[in-house]
Length: 599
Image (cartoon, rainbow, N blue to C red):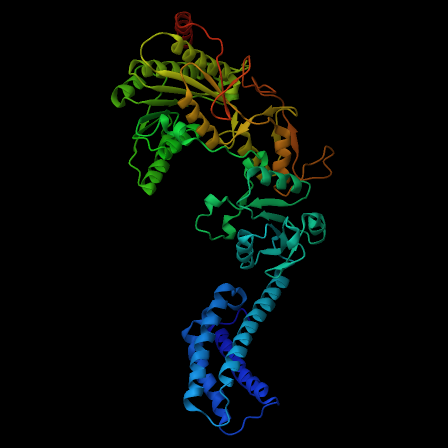
């Protein structure tokens, strides 16, 4: 039936509705006269009048353009509209012609019965055709799904899934006891306690989280509860990403790593966020990198007068510039964006930029950050990180930049590698310059934090790719732990830290609890619907392989060298004043180091 041409299916619908019209007239007569009705004389006219009015009305109200098996709210509106119009025309026709032997009550009862028959026919078509479709692909469906959440998002997602032939929806899960056992869209609502049985008996392969309004901590609780089950867990975006209100199967995406950490973001204070940005010329070095690009996004949101994007990687800078320029045009912002190719470690180049644009604020994010790469290339790592920071800071001093904020790292604390040592030396340079009486008025500060999620080269995208490739997932040590934070949150806190600075502080961000990397790998494997391969290689899907610590890698990272951090006005920002080398002595050391690098 479903494969018939459209015209044939519409003709069948017209025939069905014609029978419904005739039957409803007969039934109206029978109820009125309280006997099984046999039409007499002029009573036959009513059958013809009903058909003559109903079919044109149904065509005119587009009743035959809806697809029966997908018809729901819209079809109900169309049927109601068509039946109401028909009822008015039919009743006034009977009143106008006053046909002998035809009670006027027929003009009321028959349209009501016809309306119910039209609803019943569409509902029956929807039920039986969808049931047949599901039975037809039940054994061949790629995925057998449960939806977690019976809110509007879950119901919309269920409607979208019903229109696919590769997915079979088994039912809903919800935490509300009042909904358990009830039917929604013809599907049963189950409690969480029934998930294990459903996974085993109904061979559920996927669970879709349709709770876009839930906090990250709540989503993390749900994900932890689902982890023991061999199902692939996916989710809908947050409410902010569903602004049009329409949900489709394409909106379903992989679980975000932020949900695994369960850390709810803290909203930024508008005054702190805008203090160094709004109406000012702002420079971002390393603008093509993960942190630098997000800094640029936030600076655009903060309505800077001019944004100077600096990077020495042409492709990264070009890609970031196109994204930001597109955003600026969509939001119709007045911020001028200037992309400049520049290696900040070169003599005079950054000074020339400061001389030309006279920036108010500099966010220095340019650095080589990958520990193994810098470990193998220490000369270039130190040249770029240390002397890039030195020349940028001296240029900021020379041209009276108001604020200079260094993006630092927890690897600068008691460093065990060249990258961490170079970043600690960057901090010392700014501390020394801040302490030196130079009259420039530049406020130097440093913001130190741990790993950011999904940054280039980080462990999360690496694990995703390894799981996609079938493993193994590689972990350097079973006990290694790291702090994690989302890129947008880290950048917002960097901006606010710089706004609070009085000069020379090392700001430390509250990174939450450290995460064991091997546990993170196990959770990512589990939420992909797979299991960790056991040591005997007999049971499981994805092996986890311990490959040993890389050169310069530490088991644990710290955020402070010594002492207790002092609180600030922001609950997730702390500050510390740590020891450093005075500027005159440091200058001599840096001059000697530069000679070593050059030779």
